[in-house]
Image 1 (cartoon, rainbow, N blue to C red):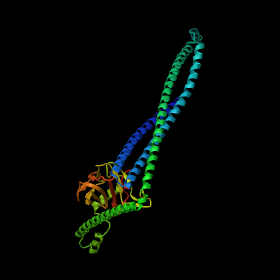
Image 2 (spheres, rainbow, N blue to C red):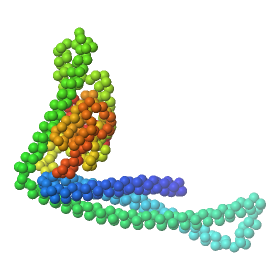
Image 3 (cartoon, rainbow, N blue to C red):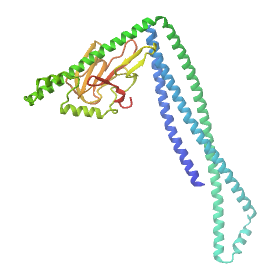
Image 4 (cartoon, one colour):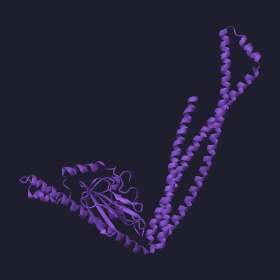
Length: 419
């Protein structure tokens, strides 16, 4: 019985310690989400004051709604953990009540027996009636142990009563906390519904300007495609440059065996012919797939890789050849792996890009307001390469990040750790 009780107490203590840690982490996450919501609200207010397009407002409102949903989800997790804690505490209370019933019944029985044999004369007679010294000694020891057992029983009843009181107090606190979480959750749900209604009104208000909205979307897509074509051209130039150097080196080393046709084929290939050193770098890059660091110190993916439906006009498919990562204002982009800066490209006065070569792999960092590396520089993992631009209209600081093998775009989420 005592072994089972000790195990139960140990289990409950471990569970409560784990749940306390989980609750603290969830509380920290809630505070973080609430701060993000406040930031979105400030951004929305600023946008409304500037009277920017309704599309931007809807995008910001959608992000705030997603954060509100995350906040509700976090509160639900807290409530679930609290419910489990309350269940564990109730089991402990039930067990203690049961143990106390048994202990009190045993103790009452001992008290009755002690009362019946309470006189010193009866105890003396119990000892004197022994047949020999050994039996008298054993009876004396029995009486001593019986008295000690009575005292221990009394102490155990006292301890368990205090323990029961402590568990009941904890349960009362947890019930209050649970009620508070339920009220908080309900309040957030009402705010969420209000925000969704406001967003729907905004969506309805721009339906009459559908043609204009679609035209804006298509214009942005055309700009994105234009940039993708420029990047593709740059990579093809990088491939041609690398293969030309390889062909010249091969021709110099083996002038008789390397033909003109072979040289031309190497130079016009769409894949880099790797030198031994470049192959080691490319293999190392590939070996780190899934474990590369984020190209920003802190951020989240706002637009994923590939095709997705537009936020407002669902029938329009938006293509992204990389990922858009939203980060804090003033943040810098950093190299995800060692390599060589192939080029620094200027799309506009406020939009620069850095392309880093890693063997036959390339990483591209777009939307930089300033750059602190140059063509031909050797860079290391996590090295700062430039400051990310903050959009004056949306207030967002977004890095467009791409990973390509030769001219083929790949999903950065498969390469970056926990993206």
